[in-house]
Image 1 (spheres, rainbow, N blue to C red):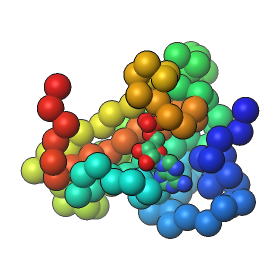
Image 2 (image 1 turned 90 degrees about the vertical axis):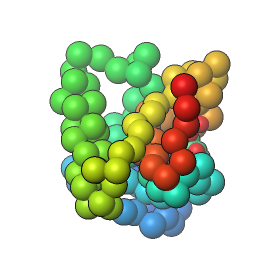
Image 3 (image 1 turned 135 degrees about the horizontal axis):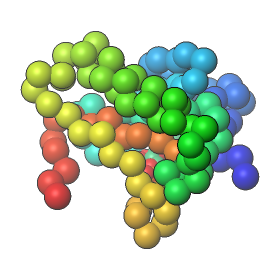
Length: 110
Ligand code: AMP
């Protein structure tokens, strides 16, 4: 099923896209939980990590390297940041299209 993120990827609804390439887009979270709160979203409609397959290995690695690039560009690489992905309703996932949260500024403590 298509999520709000599919509509953003397909430019059916407007958003400030902070980064885009063939495999992913990056947007600001609409309800930021930290000073920096970006969402790194694959263009492929993968529901969450549970739904990822071996064939998605390259996409998953790419998403992490995009996080690293964004952290460098935003000058938070040295001060530190978090990469988080929620899996399923019990894991706090509200949008059922895989995404990594990139957070910096007020760390979520585990
Ligand atoms: P999760 O709870 O891990 O599924 O994260 C979904 C995130 O998407 C939440 O942090 C929301 O604030 C964010 N979100 C929902 N709709 C939008 C939107 N239209 N644009 C940007 N972020 C959104």
